[in-house]
Image (cartoon, rainbow, N blue to C red; front, side, top):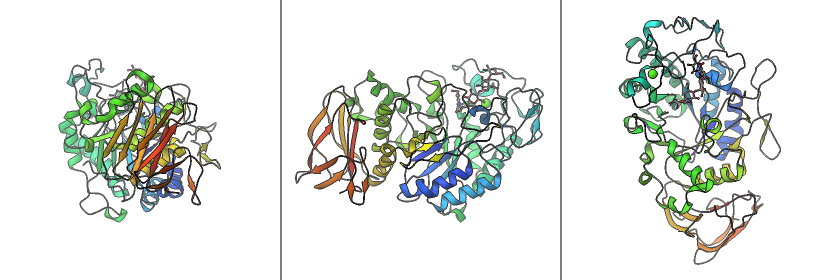
Length: 474
Ligand code: QV4
Ligand code: CA
């Protein structure tokens, strides 16, 4: 269950963190579909407990499996999935079934469901004490798999997925989403569940709904959130035989290098040789909604020049299934998503230059990023070849003869005549500009009869990347 079922000519997943269903549907039709994005990871769909200050993280505390959240209603969800599939964009749902809520007095959910959290009673499902690891213990020892899987993560009441009744409730919850036309799931806190239980649950999922342009017998895509930087008892390799796994080392290594701690030239053999999962098993990303607020070593939209270099490298490189983070602006860990005075989520506004307003960052609408999604599509099914580096942090490589990228991570200009692999002609650098009405609004690169071109990335320019591909010839 590692096949994404992207529509041909589409690639790249974007996490539209905390977006409303209606806004995602609009975005699929007006931007993601036309730009060739493959899919969207959406925020959790199940009802969550309302936390007074309305932090983003309340959505990781389920109170029932009804589809009422700040993102919208069940009907709005179904409508979004339908519209996105019609636009050639798949939907992947973030599903939270390791646990229910933590303790809250008078717990009430976004759909009006109540629960006695202290008594482990969730009538909205229903679950009772018997369905949990009870009496509870706290996760406090990552060297002990049983502690990590049978105890509570930050006080979140821990479901027992070995129980048949619990499995049924989870499978029904997921299958309803399959009926609605989703293409798969991001499984929250998978490390905190036993691989055998997950395997059983995933094996009971229905095939994807053929009414939504999926081939018959298509299985749901599964990506399991297992954070494995090494050094703990639980390994990502316990999970990748029956589904894909989040590869957290990817963004860690790239951020580390661009931050100046490891020369970029070493990325010549980037992939499994670095201890990463096999390519088809790995979901890769620079930052996610946790690391962007919790890990100071990870690049985010806040260090925009380095971040765009990191994302460009990710999208240019064939390793892994690439996911792009699309954030809201934040200063603190708990900061709310954009919302009005009574807590309704705000819609993004779209500026004339295609960027977002109203508190939304919309990294996926940055030219340097969406044009690299197009590069990735243009280079589909090609390998890395003709790697060049200057012995330090200036690198360049080709994707077959479909595209060429150069990155300047050094503190001095890149000025080189390089072999670009692409056929002779005039190309638009899709980082510094767009091809509009057959004119390039950025740098123009002239590839000569020997397929060589003069490449320049001065240090003082806005971006440290240059990229050309066969889909953007002047
Ligand atoms: C607090 C105390 C606890 C105490 C508890 C008692 O901190 O020590 O036991 O009260 O009730 C929020 C608060 C947290 C609070 C907890 C329970 O931040 O302080 O505990 O609620 O009320 C997100 C946030 C968490 C948030 C949680 C639930 O990141 O801060 O906790 O949602 O709302 C590990 C895991 C990995 C996990 C990662 C964050 O291996 O699986 O930690 N990542 C996923 C999601 C993440 C989410 C969860 C898992 C939980 O990506 O966003 O946590 O679903 O690495
Ligand atoms: Ca667990």
